[in-house]
Length: 56
Image (tube, rainbow, N blue to C red; front, side):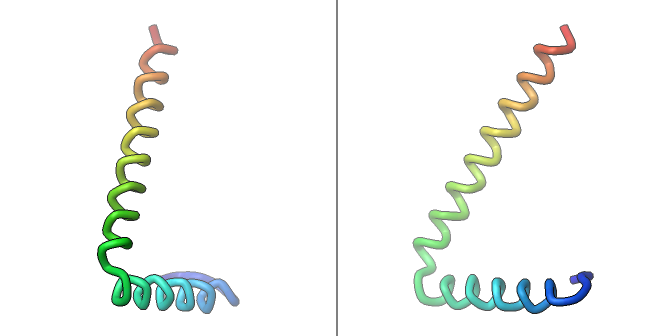
């Protein structure tokens, strides 16, 4: 990770918390990842659709 200053420590702490949560509650983390992926896919599809509508 390329970062400057205190951001590196924030990322390390964040990744450590996510890793620990994944070890303790793997099913919940998997469901959250799937849900976030579906939301991201829906937003991308909506943005693509809206972009196609503006070019016509």
